[in-house]
Image (tube, rainbow, N blue to C red; front, side, top):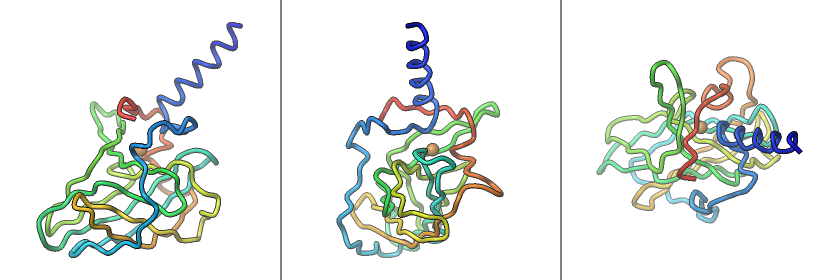
Amino acid sequence: MRKVMFAGLSAMALILSGCGQNSDGPTAAASQSADATPENAPGVTLTDAVVRLPALPGSPGAAYFTVSQGSGPARKIAGVYVEGVERSEMHETVTEDGISSMRPIDEVALETGKATAFKPGGLHVMLFNLDDTLVAGGTTEITITLDNGDKASVPATIEAIGGKDTGQAHDESDMDHDMSRM
Ligand SMILES: [Cu+2]
């Protein structure tokens, strides 16, 4: 009896402290529409797009890319959709007193004339429930939606985790997630 209880609590703790397994598929709040033939937002360019597969099946993956807004009023990224991924979330990494943690963010402000990078250890997109059609060496498509409804897409290279800077943003052990808004 005690043992069962303990196991349950551990699983809960893992879900809360990790990037989440999304096994309950809780809110629909963060879902994206898969429809859409995106009309590219004027002046907004996506480059260096990479989707990194999770180290373990069922774990979250990540997406990285750079967004540049060349002209027009500064927009915000309101959502990210990755082909073949059920749900994605924008996260930011914050380091306080040498301890890194990350949390979901609803939007990312762009600056006209500047590039905003989603990269390991910084802003990134967490990917939940990846389709097994996503394989290392393949490609998929990343689409961002701006606060005015415009979209921009880019082909993304799919990478396995491993080697160099393996998904620091996620697999790096005990990152503390604020799941309160999920
Ligand atoms: Cu994250």
